[in-house]
Amino acid sequence: MVNDPIADMLLRLKNAGAAGKHKTEIPYSGLKIRIANILLEEGFVSSVEKRTKKGAERTIEVGLLFDETKRPRLSGLVRVSRPSRRTYMKATDLRPIQQGHGIMILSTPKGVMTDAKAKKEHVGGEVLCKIW
Image (cartoon, rainbow, N blue to C red):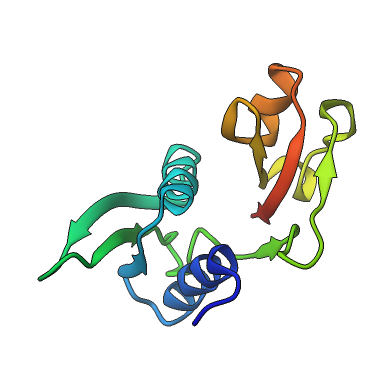
């Protein structure tokens, strides 16, 4: 049993990239698919597909991106808000990640979005993770 499914998802992506895998599977949840779609929009992964295996088991298949030197595009990540300690930020407190080369993913009242979109819409929320 996984206590923090979002941290498990992010770690699976990071480990798959470090191992040179081009695809990885993650157990399905609505929040994970929204995070994966944000990673797709921001250019950290190449594809996101919802898969159904035999029975009712659903997974998310994520295709990873690599640069010309075979390094994964998703090179670093930090899980900020944990089940034991939630972290929230106002829209005015949001700052660039890794000098603008990374993103912060927030869960806001308007849905899951990046820090740039949250700042544009003047909405804060729970900081899920930082990715660069």
